[in-house]
Length: 99
Image (tube, rainbow, N blue to C red):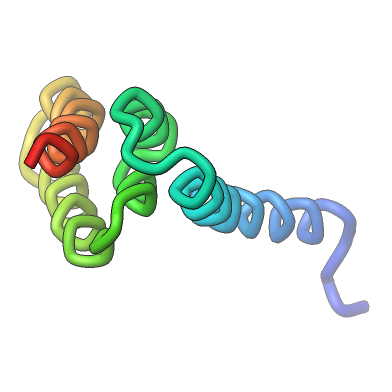
């Protein structure tokens, strides 16, 4: 037996879908509906830092926000960390799109 069953296969598919969907959706919407503020805000609220894909030059902002989310989880109480993780990405995208 290899130890790989239906549960492991489903888990791999869910993880792949959770990482590929935000990239695909962000890139697709960037081409079809560029620079629409509410679309960017909704993407960042749904996918967190991965929603930054919607705007050009997203890689450094994704890495910065990912670091902020990880640091918040490690250093702050759970309620404050959740608030920072929910609010930080939409705020950054808002200010990026308003420049």
